[in-house]
Length: 165
Image (cartoon, rainbow, N blue to C red; front, side):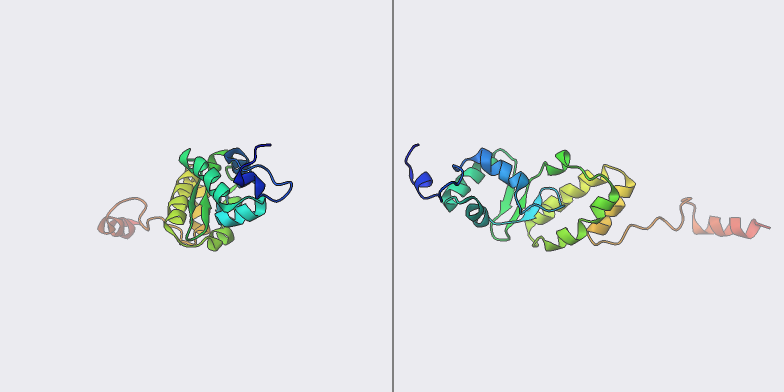
């Protein structure tokens, strides 16, 4: 086995630091929740979990990030896998509605806002019931239908109502 500083400092039995192993861990690790691809985790925590030196984890993550497969906000400790929803779409609007408690746990930051905007677009493409569930998961009031769905002016509507017998 090659003897470099990265491998010597690992705990016994720890996997050799590499982007491929880290990628699998990002997809399957204990930091994941029901919210696909968006989690609260720091690279230092990943290092500890894997028994890797922090620098080795940062280096492996940099490869993943350069490929556009993941983003991380170091200050907030937010991790986003942008394509997660493409590979793990919600099965029903109830699943989306259940994301509300998980979304609340993700710290406010630019990456969180960007991720939730992209997730909203993906979920809304699944249909109106999914869109409504996403609105609720984000803690927003649902958009109300127009009180005048015909598009007619109020005067015209009043005139029609007065003609009814």
